[in-house]
Image 1 (cartoon, rainbow, N blue to C red):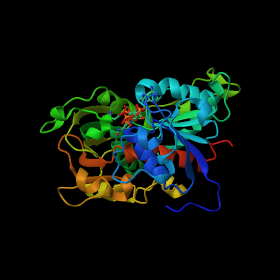
Image 2 (image 1 turned 90 degrees about the vertical axis):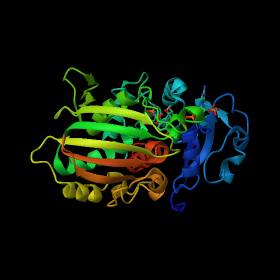
Image 3 (image 1 turned 90 degrees about the horizontal axis):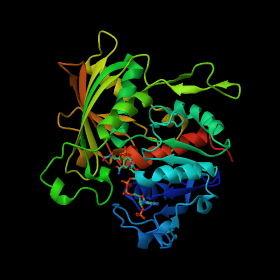
Length: 379
Ligand SMILES: NC(=O)C1=CN([C@@H]2O[C@H](COP(=O)(O)OP(=O)(O)OC[C@H]3O[C@@H](n4cnc5c(N)ncnc54)[C@H](OP(=O)(O)O)[C@@H]3O)[C@@H](O)[C@H]2O)C=CC1
Ligand SMILES: N[C@@H](CC(=O)OP(=O)(O)O)C(=O)O
């Protein structure tokens, strides 16, 4: 991507800059046409050191020169006050308190952590699916004490949730509501951060449990695919009736998730079976056509990090595969294959997503691009 000469760079900060997601933020932001890395933050173990000395760099590209000598800061708002956008790849154990402090200091935070995803006033935005949920931010700011003008928190989803809601959104937009969903994940080791799972636990093995993951997928899917509705008339802020996430209330969504850790470095694969609310359900060919023709609002609005082809549909019977397909479009889209009839529900398929890119850092970056284009960021 080329830097744009006609607009001044937007100064951004990265919290958790030394972690798995933080390193992907740095790789992507160092080539970003609008955003320029201004501050890096991590724990007190890293603070005070040049970035190259603090980080255990695990990307396939070299550490960008622009950040090598940047001194890592403590994650305190004072160090980030010149930033127009703050990205967070913080460990969830500390993200709650730190992101709260940054929002209170009038900093817009785009977070990967799980802490605020269930907050009724924080949008959970998969940028290729539900950018309409940005509309809840004003209410988040007004309900804050004291009310805010610039600070807010936007979260993106769990990496497995992100992978499957993208094709599900395409199917709902073409064929109406989904009412039943069975998902089985095959999740890469990098999803657990670094160093993650001990090698003796994962080599030559599959671990059929990821703490909290099934509950996150089942809950987050409803918030993302659902809409926003007025709350009861007495729930107000000023003269405005509060809005609430409807959690897919028009068609209650039954979801069952089963999560597995597999010995793959990057790329979460998910087997999905879908039951539609409307009869007759679409054929596999109609599903393939709908997935291929899906265009995200982020792409249509001109977000530079949004993939041109949101969903790549494979015809080959043995694709997608993590090693072969995760880097397609820089990991910004998803790949779908094996679209076929399901003898129990209606349609089944497999979806693959780069858990660190569209599953984490790329989603936050596109969310920030959407915030710029939708005028959500106040200067
Ligand atoms: N990996 C993935 O695929 C995905 C991860 N996520 C979420 O993104 C977040 C980051 O994940 P990941 O990069 O994998 O995690 P890592 O464990 O790799 O990185 C954690 C980061 O948090 C920093 N940190 C830890 N403790 C503190 C502290 N007390 N104060 C300030 N900073 C601290 C670390 O800094 P230091 O190096 O100094 O310790 C490091 O930069 C998590 O919330 C995770 O759940 C979401 C989707 C996908
Ligand atoms: N739990 C996911 C990654 C992750 O950190 O998810 P979350 O942000 O929902 O806690 C995995 O292990 O692959």
